[in-house]
Image (cartoon, rainbow, N blue to C red; front, side, top):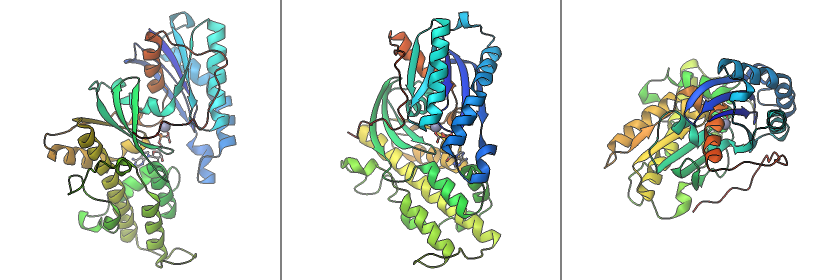
Length: 356
Ligand code: KG4
Ligand code: ZN
């Protein structure tokens, strides 16, 4: 069964054709980075307009690259939650129009569940596993029992991981989007210069009393770390004022130290979730999963666990926003005989199940 998937939840206009939830026949992503760069962040109205402008061409390209005609498609899926309302509406409207015109079932999909499924789409089929989703808008730990079985174990109390990377990158004048640029700058700092914010990285996995059976221990917080970077760059712990001049060496040390502490937090929570749930496998998704240091640190630490924890990262193109992940996941709903009605609505902030 082939599903045409559509993704417009934030600043990427994307469409993909995926067969049987596994085989990616096409995966087209039109990024809007250049449109938002002058503003230093995503402007919702600009994003929605750009989606409306590009969605038809992106869908045409995905169909052509998959060598599919409408006859070959079994269902149309679109991310309808969570995301920017104007942006989501464009994808949902496009999917409805195609579902009506082609006489195919319509499926509304959760963007974060799509990020979780990216690992399975990339070949990781171990269940249950722990999934860490770290993107620009979300930070979440799930217990994943099957492609459609998710239990939230922890989430962020404040900033999302990617948001923290982007904001620190902005303080370091690294442009937009800042996460990848921060990762590159951090590589220039030697290992001994990466400990400026070590005290904010939380307990290492496996330290006494960790993991606690207190569920909140699997929640995340990045705002304290972000604020610590801000005051470090200001050179004072009080009030407002200009950031001080710093050398290139110091900039790299700040980037690397922030990255190190943020990765420690993500790695510690993920391994703590594995131990608490007695699950020996973890996968990571979302844009921050592209981060090299996160990949390296989680693999190193997971190998030290007893028994060793298996770790999986999808290729970067399936970590950042794309439509293949929701088209792949939609297949599993379709196989269960599920479909949504034409009254499917966009839901920018769905109520999430709270941690167990
Ligand atoms: O999953 P995604 O493409 O979009 C959302 O659903 O938000 O994630 C985008 C986020 C941005 O905050 C971006 O800076 C971050 O992922 N990101 C990175 C890296 N590549 C993307 N953060 C750190 N290191 C990277 N290499
Ligand atoms: Zn995303």
